[in-house]
Amino acid sequence: MKTLLSCAYNMDNCCVELKFANGSMIAIDTIAVENEVADNLYQRSELDYLIYNDPIGYTNLILNGDPVKYLKTITVYKPFEN
Image (cartoon, rainbow, N blue to C red; front, top):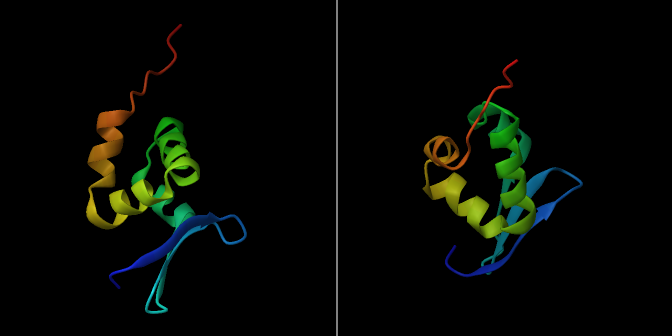
């Protein structure tokens, strides 16, 4: 699994798919990831941004990083106050 041929979001099955030169493939279920790591709408929208605009960065975050720590660092949740 050394040479990555493609990495793209597949809207048909809501997965980020990675295809390698040796014929292997990895599919990351984005809905399952969001359900596990995102606590609020802001965190979900950050993951959605990565999925659509930087699928390789998203894949790297999910497979090699700490998505919970990333989301707590990058998003700020400000509840509406009256």
